[in-house]
Every structure is written in C-alpha cells, then in structure tokens.
Length: 63
Image (tube, rainbow, N blue to C red; front, side, top):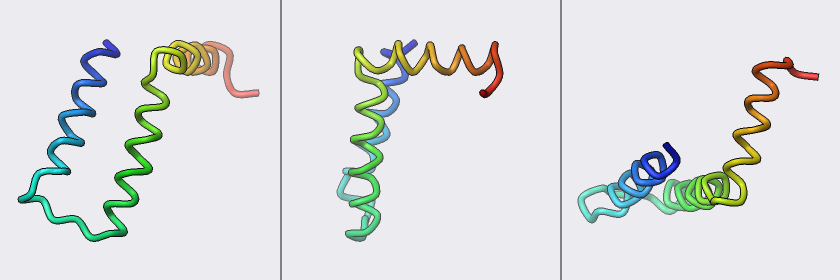
C-alpha cells in the first residue's frame, strides 16, 4: 500500500514540476513544504508509527 501511495505522490510531484504547469513562488514554496511533509510521513521509519497512531485513535477514540 505504501509503495503505491508513494508512487502516486511522486507522480503528482512530477506533474507539478512539469513546464506546462505554471507555479508562482508562493505555490511553489507551499508544494515544497507539502513534499517534505509527505516524504517525512511516508518514510519507512515514520509511516508504521503514523499508521499505529491512526489505528489507535480509530479503535480507542481521541483522548
């Protein structure tokens, strides 16, 4: 699942970086921040932790 998810994100990022898609500096900066966040949460170290936290909240409710 995570491989497909990462591929989709990478595909989306590639699409954002295509010359036909014009980005103003503000949007570009936002995309850069989003890209870092997505890369962080989808990294092999973080993803399982995030997944466990999400499952915990689903099954136990928020504190």
